[in-house]
Length: 512
Image 1: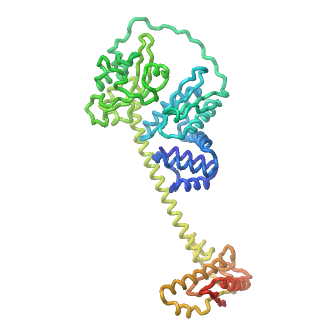
Image 2: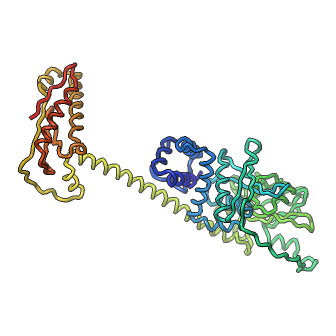
Image 3: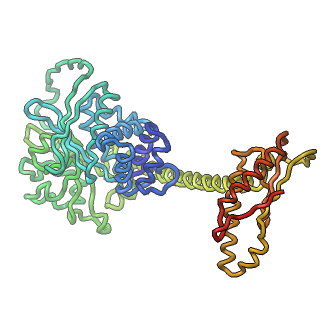
């Protein structure tokens, strides 16, 4: 799924529980990634499921609660990302919003290549007219995200509190059903009753031929689903429609909404956006086989005078190439149809989308380079502070000169291991050399703990040569207790070295 889903999950955890918790969740989910998710990048679904599972374990919160909270955060992310106006105009009430939700997802599916958008449709419960939301998705287990989104939409956009209950799961059917009931809502003003006024005479005004030219993308069919009339462009690209017994189900498959294409189902979902796709082999156009299909998007209109249904539609294409590859041209779309402008705008949107995506990838690479540079800088700083006094290292980091200084009185310490030369002479083979290195490592590690500037700020380790360990007190930062501090260090070193055994014997140290 697209990165904006994972990014919304990241925002939820970071804002609610902090950055450290998010890093822990990433580690628990085996996610080796620095920086944020790329909004326009497609990630594997398994990654999202792993993050949710890790969040459940780390936060010790039920998955249903996390998913519902994630739905709320995802809606807020969409608002902040510039989709607030689109969301506001989808409907004046939660019911209107949800009835148009499927059309929004279909639109997003055409804007974002490769998006596997879910599908929604609405029905009413017969006994009381309560709203039932049908949710279709190839991704299982995300039902409570929908609950969080629906509650947040109703609360923030329509000032309405709703209860959302799952009344059917995917185990019972091929989709999930939610029962949505309003607990509180603003008072609705009754709409004025308008009497139906007949403004046209009963005489025919438009001939079928003219209607077919004005609406070149339309299909009229009867209760038997048999095609009665089609637009001129539909007739050109799908000649089969002129057959007497040709049914709309013979040439088109439903994409949205998810329901069987029957006359009764269409009448019960008459206020729903329909997306139908041509079946394989029905288009007769001179194009490669992979482009011999067409998505038709539009609405169903019932004509009570004839008991027919008209599917008024337009070709759902991404850009001009997508249009021409299917044997269509701008001239096939009537001048009054906004699809002309939509196709041209989609062409510009696709160019902007590619530019934005490339910019996002470039920004991510720059951030990655910055993080690597910062890590190298920290390594350099650690090395610098390990070989130079803090005050000197600070001056060098800021590229300031280090003037020579004179110290009237300081205390130096030199330590050595008694009999070290003889010990080395007796261990000249490879095994003996390793013993020498291990012993020196133990000794120097113990001494470095004693000269740690945090624990002993008045002592500065100068260097180690062979078995000799050199330290100084009173510089570079002057202090009046340098002799006492150095004497205490010598005693501590002699006590600590007694705990280091070599061939069962303690190491003997000399200090001066």
